[in-house]
Structures are given as C-alpha cells and as structure tokens.
Image (tube, rainbow, N blue to C red; front, side, top):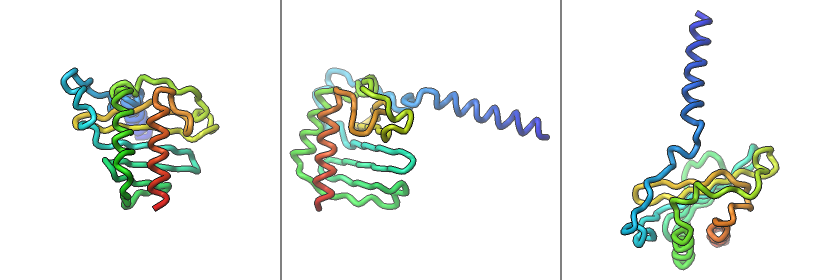
Length: 163
C-alpha cells in the first residue's frame, strides 16, 4: 500500500511539475494581426502588477480609469478608486508602443528576486482575447522596455493612495 501511495504521489507531482515547467505557457497569447494592431488600445482592458516575497505583498489592478491596490494576500474585496483618465490613456499608449505580445520576451536586468534580494514582480496585460505576462523581474527594476509602463503604474498607485 505504501509503495502504491508513493508511486501515485510521485506521478502526480511529476505531472504537475511538467505542466508548470513553462510558467508563461498558459499566458502565451495569440499574436495580434496587423488589422488588430491599430485597435490594440481598445483591446486592453486590464493591467495587473504584483510584487511579492515571503513577508511582502503588493497588487495593483487597473481597469480603465479605475484601480485597486492591496498589500494583503487575502483579497476579499478589491476597492476600486477612480484616477485621471489621462493616466489610463498614457498607460495604454505605452503598452501599445512596446507591444503587449512581446512583453514575455523581455529579460529582467537583475535576478535578485531569485535569492530573496528583492521582491519578485510580474506584470499582466489582459486584452479582449489574450493574457500577456512578463517574466519575473525585481520589484523596482523592470526590463528597460517596460520602464515607462512600470512608472505609470506606480503613478496610478500613488494617485489612488492619496484618495
């Protein structure tokens, strides 16, 4: 019985690890065709930024001109606050200029999150039919291609925290 349990547990763990071996696989998105590229701004509906360590958590969810911020892992209810629509327009334009479908290819400039030297951060962009996700990067040090997007997200966070 113990052998059966050991084999079953090993098999389940192996299959789960195999499915998780490419963490961005479920986030790989269908590339936009050229006709859809001009409408990319209208396709983006949600931007999610998350940074975490064992003792730190931060999540910002941006949906058009509303955003929620939490530093609690158990997000019972997100409270959304309005912010300046110009920030949303700026964020979408920055994402459009970088290309949402390319963000998973950008390399992080540092890897301090791999040994608890920094919080690990991720950025997700949800469009009409796809979810695009970055590789994990250090909080405060995104890939250079995403720096303007990161700064705009932080500006949005600051504006809703002032409310």
